[in-house]
Amino acid sequence: MTNPELCYENVARAKRLIDTINYNGPICAMTDNTKLKPRLRYSSNFGCIIGSVLSKEETIVNIYNDIPKIINNVKSENGIAKNVRAYILQVCLFLKSFYSNNIYINYL
Image 1 (cartoon, rainbow, N blue to C red):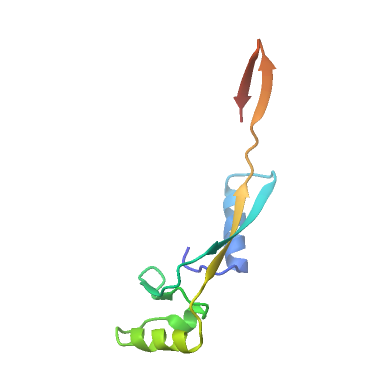
Image 2 (image 1 turned 30 degrees about the vertical axis):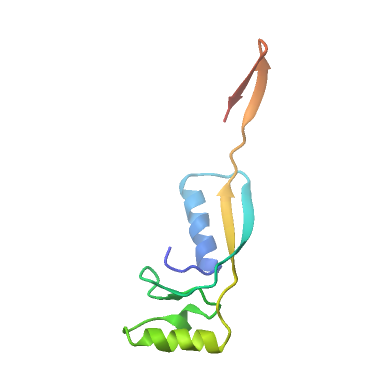
C-alpha cells in the first residue's frame, strides 16, 4: 500500500481482494487509537516526514534541504502527532466446536 489514508481506493483494494478469493461472508471492521511518542522521522517508503498531523503533500521531501524546512513548519503549527488511528478490515474466521467422547474438538 502506498497511500496510508482512509480513502475509497484502499477500501476498494480490500474489496477486490475479497472478491478474488470468492469470499461472501461477514467482514470485521476494527479501529485502534494508539498513543505515540512524539517524534518526526523520514519514511523512505512514503518519501515524506512522518509523525505529524499535516497532510502527506505538506511533508514530501524532494531534496535533503527540504527536511529542516518541513520540520520547522510542523513545529510552528504544533503539528506533531500524539496518537495514530488505524482502521482494519478483516475476514471473519469462525471456530466451531463440538463435544464428542468427553473431548472438545475445534475446527474451522
